Length: 470
Ligand code: TYD
Ligand code: MG
Image 1 (cartoon, rainbow, N blue to C red):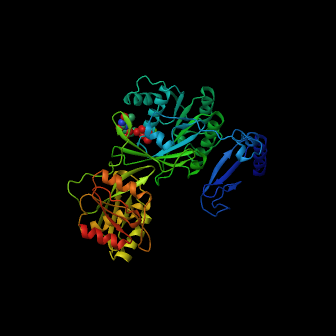
Image 2: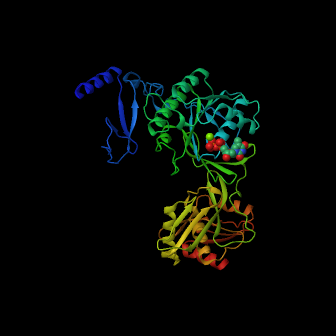
Image 3: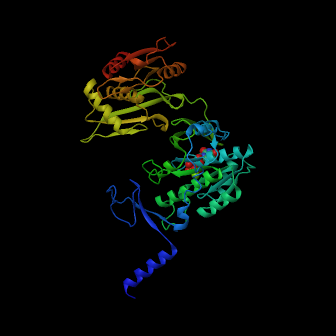
């Protein structure tokens, strides 16, 4: 048969089946009817991905379940309803969720493999079930028997949590429709696949399509839904952040899998505060909340060592003391700058400030910086502690016992205040710290018992203060 007929026939079949394939750019979201190497909208290469193959009839109703009000109303006249929150029974998890699970709310929880996502969610579902809520745990990674084994290990012997081992989207949606649980967990979104797409499970198109369907299902039926997501090597949730826009709450697990502490951080929350942190310890019997975590990120040195400086970080509502460690060592022709738990670009900037304004040069040195315990610090208040740890390592002189510092460092060498400085200082004093180098604007008006404050305005003053104390 000549090729022209084949094309025509395919076209007719497609038209009859009312199928439509789009290619969507993962960078700009632009749509192209055919696959191209370069996105016609933003000119990025290799970003077009198969988006959907669906008949046109359901396409028209795609968002039917989302739009509940059809009339335009004045904002003041719309009755504001208080959110009905269901506490999970785990205080630290409720803290990051903003008080508990919300009816119809969708939570995305990401983290490295083996960090404890499945463990925490199984524990949460069990306590919800025990408090009288109906729950469903959909597993695509482990069998029902494996989940049962884990629940025995967690001491949840006669758990009434319903388990469904399934990866096909339609079947999951049908089960959700039939059982109507109060809270459902999908572990993980990367294993779920829709037969309407030809791409493999875990591909961006599949992840996005399945998450969109599950989100619509949650909104329409009022199920509180938790989607578990794997992170890619660069640390973002697979499916270039598309899922983060779709869901109400995004939580990330942080922490070193080798240490027993785990942090759960809220990155986005439509129902609560962001940057709130929940702290857990991994034990024999699963994850246990740590209600007073201020001192867990300090390593226990018998005597002060060079290259270590403690700071107080305040992410969320609780101050926590974190040890910043630095190692400065003679490097090769292209010295390395490596940071774990702190921003790498910011480290390069701080080294330039240190050179220009305090005359401390590390150009020919390797510089490694680490926040102890796998905690990630995104606030600039860590700057001063990073610089003091670096200079301490470079000079081989430890900072004094009971020393701490915090404050943001600007490009002009100025030291800027950190928010809620008093709270940070009080927490440090409570834990027995005795000397602090802080920005001038953070110096307390009334002295704090047991704490000597050195208020500084510039980075060179901070270096001088630390040198005089060492
Ligand atoms: P898991 O919840 O399976 O991780 P994820 O779902 O994020 O991949 O966590 C598994 C790890 O937790 C595994 O390394 C063993 C450890 N663990 C404990 O230490 N204690 C426990 O009670 C359980 C259930 C797991
Ligand atoms: Mg898991």
